[in-house]
Image (cartoon, rainbow, N blue to C red; front, side, top):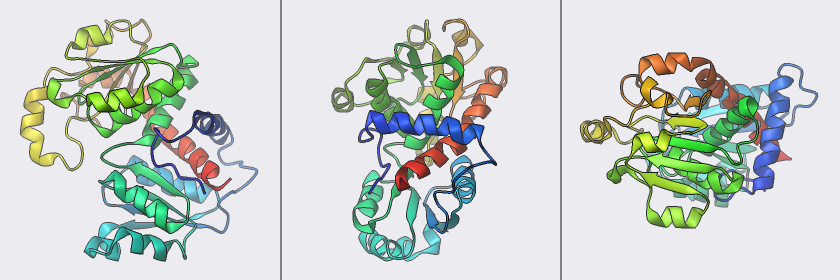
Length: 298
């Protein structure tokens, strides 16, 4: 039984297989020779709203021959207090796989443990594995192997996207620099557990200097709306803009997992200058997630 719950737990060989297969799914879209999900129904269980994740998984499941079934928290008893393990044991007898987007990492892991069906983490407060696999795919598609390169993450360095970059750095042998205010830096325990060449600083210019990739995410993640005023105050200045791009390596990529709040974590001019990369990165969620689905049932 295969699950994608965390990049910490995903073996590098499986990660690389997903990347290779994603290239094939992208190249052969509309002309797939096989439909690995034929006859299967997959549930998309989302406690957090979504554009890219929901659409890419629904389209991907359909294109692989399966039937997606979208369930938000209000559609099922889970939203009324039924234990996750009970929901998992019921759905596991009816569906063939689950894609879960929720708050607690433990909820996804408990569902996988009790459902006995392939389970994919489509985002939790701890990790966003599908996004970072798509990011690595996008970088390597445009610049070749990421090993030995330098990635600069600017902004909230303690968010789920930053966490998944941290787990990936050691696996793929690239340098990860994180520029964030002290309040929004990853924990020392996480960095120690992850290993790899990772540095954390409050110095945004030093972090960006000579980087091959500048990356950012929103300052106010879902579930953090009550902290919006404080977060904006503290994170103001941790922005990817044209002056910061000039410090990076010539031809450096700029990426954003979207949605983007222009004028906060990235300015409008910089996003538009790098829109081709950013929106291809968004498109690549579809191809990568089809590769993940295929991997999960193979």
